[in-house]
Amino acid sequence: MGNQSSPEGFLLLGFSEHPGLEKILFLVVLTAYLLTLVGNTLIILLSVLDPKLHSPMYFFLSNLSFLDLCFTTSCVPQMLVNLWGPKKTISFLGCSVQLFIFLSLGTTECILLTVMAFDRYVAVCQPLHYATIIHPRLCWQLASVSWVIGLVESVVQTPPTLRLPFCPHRQVDDFVCEVPALIRLSCADTFYNEIQIAVASVLILIVPLSLILVSYGAIGRAVLRINSAKGRRKAFGTCSSHLMVVILFYSSVIAVYLQPKNPYAQERGKFFGLFYAVGTPSLNPLIYTLRNKEVKSAFRRLLSLLLGRSGPGWNP
Image 1: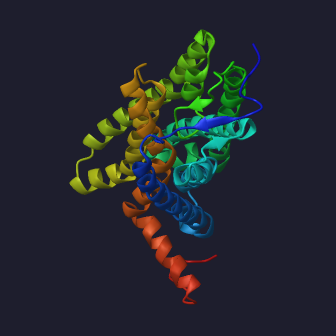
Image 2: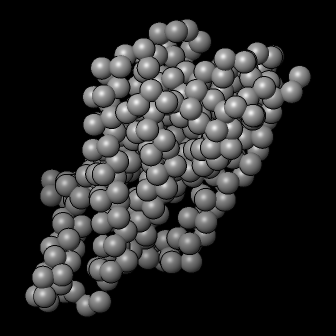
Image 3: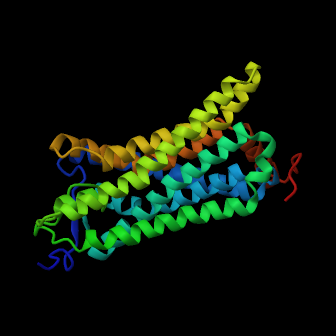
């Protein structure tokens, strides 16, 4: 059976049955997108320009910020158009590109957050050997591996999803072209696709999350062995921001990809999918800047430079 959706594209329903809610969501999504653009761009600039932020932690953080910029830009403009007006169509090519980018960058973020947990583990549990273990070459290798794994996952999973014979109504019950929503749209047997997404969920979600939890278990034990309260607060402070980002990201992704098959779960999954696509990328910069004295100090030095007053410690 041929792909019935290729000539006409798809209809992204979102919350079209609640027009009033869509107008509110338009403002929320637009605000979150602007925060994402400003916050993540600022973190990238600070990580590149300020020598005091030339460390593995901020190298990985700038990678995460760049990833979030690409991730939201791949879906938010289309989402805003669909939320604002009655036209909710997306071409088959547009849906294919969106699906490919979503899978690639979502997978990359899962691996990158695991790499960042490893970095924090070494910083807390092996502080004397940190510079030797987490050297610049390893940072580039770990970041490259994260991006390559994301690309490979998308190359493997996107074509089988797009080759599904879709139902003639072409109505995707979601905001974006995600794998679970496209599988639900198929009129054929999707057993192979469901097995594929289950295996991918274990390899890309469960395994990395387990490694992160193991890392933080070791970090927790190391922090409890520190005698001074000040030392424990400092050690915990180096990890708390990353841990908050992990909780927000993985809770929303698991809710989208591992939800049960019933209408209530699908409706709830749309809210989690919206938060996953828009909320977490806008909150990540706030979490890292509000709780990080080094980033706030770098921001003040950047402001001093832009205003023509050379701040202390700033040597571009």
